[in-house]
Amino acid sequence: MSNTYPHPIIAREGWPFIAGAFGIALLVQIFAGWAWSLPIWLIAFFILQFFRDPARVIPTLPNAVLAPADGRIVAVEKTRDPYLDREALKISVFMNVFNVHSNRSPVDGKVCDIWYFPGSFLNASLPKASLENERNALWIKTDRGEDVTCVQIAGLVAKRIVCHVSTGDHLSRGQRFGFIRFGSRVDVYLPLGAKAKVGIGDKVLATETILAELQN
Image 1 (cartoon, helix red, strand yellow):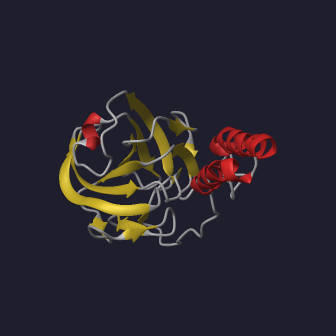
Image 2 (tube, one colour):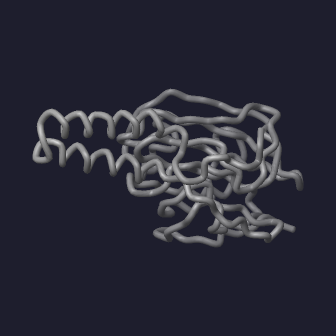
């Protein structure tokens, strides 16, 4: 898999939705006029902004764990990693519908396993969403040998988790690996020795914000 995503402005996952929305808006305008088409144009432009996917600058700190998504920090806590059955530091990023929803790898490492779980579509900002909502978990073994679990979680409106990587793939930190459509959350489980660099309520940007630092 290429480390460079070739379409950094508009996410490819959104192309059918964008084309459909703008096509409908144009048809309504042609056959019914501006007054009827204006609300549909507004919806079309909302969909366009939702699927924006800007390029990001990758920090050079070697032991940094990067934010996997844009959004707000809703959890920084020591808890049980249910995927690797270990005590871990969990950091959760909640994305609202106005955030960029492209998901990027928090670390350099090999994808050792992937688990998908169907589930509910609760508000993704709620703690129970981590274990009850539809989710897709990646176990990443970093190049330094640490275990990191990165979990894509569907939200109240989100109905589709997209993951473009497979077991055995190598991810570079900041590399785009997936997308969640229309509101969601990403949980990252880290070794207990990791030092959190964010707090509850902080706003973060995928790739550019450092969530934590792993032990040297």
